[in-house]
Amino acid sequence: MRNQTKKIRAGDKVLVTAGNSKGQTGTVIRSVGDKVLVQGINLCKRHVKRSQQNPKGGVVEMERPISVSNVAPCDDAGNKVKLHVNVAKDGAKELVYKKDGQNNVWRSMKQAKE
Image (cartoon, rainbow, N blue to C red):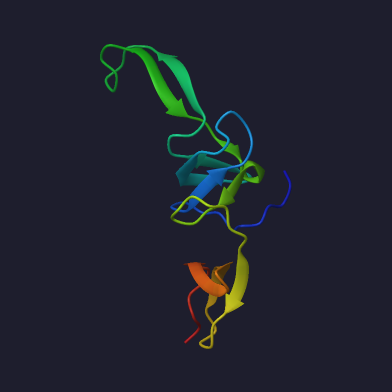
C-alpha cells in the first residue's frame, strides 16, 4: 500500500475523476488507507439472506470503496480545486484553494497551538 496524502477525509465533498461514476460528486463517508467510501458513488447490488436487519432479504444496493487517486476535492459548485497548505498567523494550518485571485479556506487541518 502506497503512502497517500491525507487531504481527503470523512465529510469532504469530492468529485470522481475516473471510472463509471466519472463526473459525479458526493460526500466522503469513510476513509480507510488509500480507499474512500463516497455516498451514492460506485453502487453495487448485493443479494442478502433473510436476517433481523432485512426480514425479507433480497437485493440491496450499497456503496463500494474507490481509490483516493480517482477522486479530487471540489468546491460547492462541483468544480475541481487544487489545495494548498496555508499557515495562519496563530499557527493553524488550513487547506486553501484559489478562486478569482483570492484564497478560499476549504478546511482547517489542525488546531492552533496555544
